[in-house]
Image 1: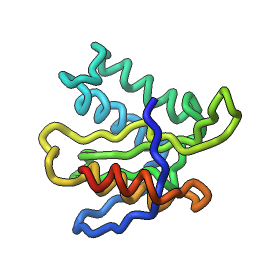
Image 2: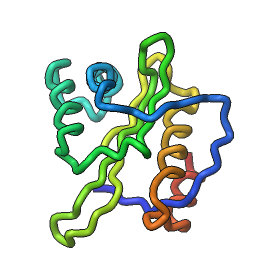
Image 3: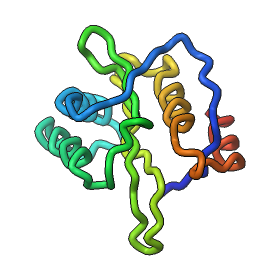
Length: 143
């Protein structure tokens, strides 16, 4: 598991995003399938399996979905990119912390800065108690 301490991020983009909701689950399941298919993250899941993964995420598989910190970019009823953060509890320490469960972009929408924009927007909306400047700045500066 990769970890990243968070810092506030400036959103300098013409992109716009809205918070995700439970009602977005069917389209997020489709996006998950399309975004991860034929990539290093593809484990041979079917479209039905990725839909169940998103449904499980909304049901608390990785902790409650942080809808105030999770966003999507859409165009004509199609989700182009999304960030899904959850309030994950570390089983070893019992400490709650945000977890980026999914950051996904449609294959034909990659390379336009959407994932970076969504990641920065999500970090910016995380509760301040989760923010630590050093590591996030280093990671984001390498993108």
